[in-house]
Image (cartoon, rainbow, N blue to C red):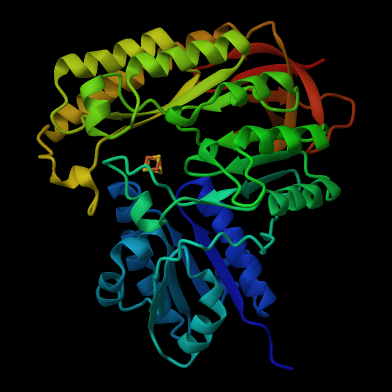
Length: 439
Ligand code: SF4
């Protein structure tokens, strides 16, 4: 009998990409291939890529150079590039990188078995057609994590923020049918999953084409039917934050009190140029509403520093927004121009050093705010989900609170396992981590 061929998948970028790798794993296993955990054992290497930032693409090009050497030692190896970069750069990738056997975009993963066959017949291929109907609704992702699961409830994005490639790489927004999401949640519940994160590029604009329900109802139905599962979701767009959703978050204990809520800039002119469709004042009123209903809700954000034409005054408005809102944490980046986006046509006029200086100022301010907020946690007791051993100190374990804070703790004498919900009293903190003891 012929031995099954093995595939090693390397994933870059966001949780949507991680979930896509799980969908890819499911498709190829169904077609008779194996998923390998060790690259040395694989007959094929799939690189699932991200195009959101220039730096992410650079890392992948560097990886391809490295794999070129590896392939010299293993000439029968198949190397394929998947995901957003595949869609963004298309034929250019096949031309530039001779080690690639095929390139496949996010809407064409069902073609993988055929592309693999062609690759073994030494035919190189490109499959990057957009398909705005594709939601992979019928495919149950192959998951290795038995505690937490990501569930994509929609694909693509219609927002066309001027700096972002996602609408071009992942196509128009389309929601999965609520019935299929509820089925997937039910099957995860039967398998003993403890935490589910609903994913979408704009998760709170979810609208089921069949049952006509919005995100708030979907979340409420799932939380009510599965009280033993913690529910999270990301990423929420401020323009789609409804009163119903804020109400649902506060009404269910098993909906985690953490919201990732990207602001991007505190200056209205920059927000207009970014095509974010809200003003800072409107955003702030939403944060106030969320906190009024959920006083303990942690809020995190994304900030871009040095957007084209950003003045010092506008940069200071972002700093002032951080001081006013006091986020628990933030992903902070300096602007990088992405091909095919609207902002590509704005002169990228800020010197690199100035972008870095502004970014460092933002990071320093946010770190001090996170440090202060985490210090306020000392003495409080958090219910937290045990994730496993601490990455830094194998003698300690880590757990995550509903507010998405990482808590490191010493293993108590009672038996504890991954997936347990435990109470931890916070004893110490840094800007990024809490330390606690079992109570
Ligand atoms: S909401 Fe804006 S930033 Fe987010 S994926 Fe859509 S276009 Fe990109």
